[in-house]
Amino acid sequence: MDTRNQEISALIQQGGSLSIEFKSDLKCLSDRELVAAVVSMANTEGGEILLGVEDDGTVTGRGRSYTLSAKMYQKAGKKVEYIRQAGFALIQQEQMVLSYIEKHGSIKRGEVMDLCRLDRNQAYRLLSRMKKTGQISQKGDHKGAVYERA
Image 1 (tube, one colour):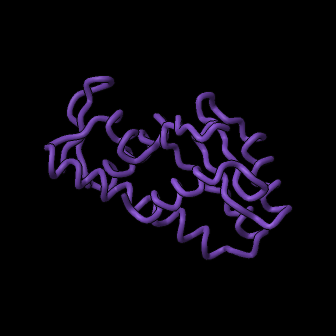
Image 2: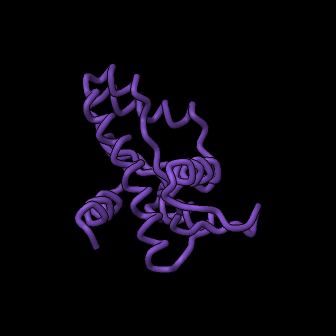
């Protein structure tokens, strides 16, 4: 288990508190709910919001990843952190897709969703970008489409 996973496990064991909030991911969280949780933390001493964790500490999430907007980081005086977070995420996703293709020969959009923890549209945009830059090529259409190294 890597260090961040150990930290998250420790937070879950501590239970919800003023600085640790659990948010279920069994249903899609609205932007309003997510913003309310972030604002609540920002108005106190800060803390951690764990998405995909039920009130009893059960992990049910689908592993989605959320990044706050550039405006939120700017208001918090942390512009560099936004670029670091958003920039690395894209590079890491591309590298993970390419590594997966190297090991397995091809990848499907559903596998990209699982691998990179993206929703359907995000995975589509990632694959489209990678096709456009010549990193991968698409074989087949629609549900039968697979992506290989170009």
